Image (tube, rainbow, N blue to C red; front, side):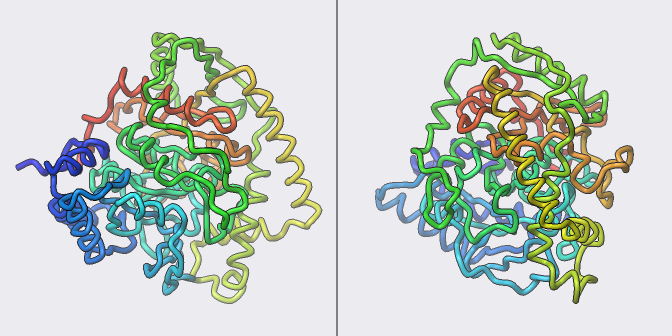
Length: 467
């Protein structure tokens, strides 16, 4: 017997709830049942809150029956990555060093989830402090990819992507400091977007405050647009948060794309992608061309790989947060993470600030490049999902735990909107993602292009083997 949520998008579920066709309580019971059945196989949740979730669903149902105004996400089950604070829930960031830490705030994004009427079922797994691009940590163990349980779903928003791909919830909140939404979206076959830096406010302060984003992972482009709408907007607790009105992301999904000028780069100038990935993505680029877009192929976007600029900033921030643990309780940390933190903390203040200024130069060069294009298309990841237990693909061992990704971290340095959209499958049946990057403050261009691509090449009816 089919479940009430099977095959339905978040938008469809919310509409059915508002029309009293679906009970939020019944939907929550089904969601918790799915989570209970699939989590032992996927290990995608770090903690559950079933009692509170049911209370929230009961309240949501009563509001519907009483004819009260309903929020954007009313009655919809959601999950939140464990790099985001939820008051009263464990806030461990995937680390044994914070195993007993409890959130004392609802992050702004979480506050807005509740205000929008959604029902939180639990927190999802992450690599330790988001430091790896795969889905394992010393605290929660290995998270598995629904398309093949022997493969990683990607990271660091591992549990969020795996749970959405498996259909436990239609949407989930992830974070992205170097690709941690786009990487697992690519490897898990769903849509994920980090909006403009500061579009979604962050509090408490991140360990990587100039790089971090909170954003949606979803089965469809419009579901992601809906979730991003719900969580966006200025918050005084985050001095970086964007003050302008929130764009109409859902309306952007209906805008035509004919005449858009898109740059396409296979390597950005330095990456080493799998040839099968490029073959799949070249078909995607031709599809955009058939939809009326102008495509300009460019081999080299950047003069050199900006990984050192990113590592200098990201790992120094996490390293300072974990300095005492590194010194006194190093055995609690993931050895691969500890190693990169050591290197980041060894830089002098002169070396650090030299990289800060190089980052600003890099950001301006990229801004100027985008003056000529509406979007940049590239692989989201250089390969499909690889075996669990590995920190990087077996053919890219000359790279480190994040540098193997190549394509995502440059756009955390610039803060631009960037997304990964499902573009096809390898011969082994594993998903491949296409990255779309827009100009500053131009998420609407990603949504219009992504929704047109989704309509022309839908993936919603493709389901992982685990189902």
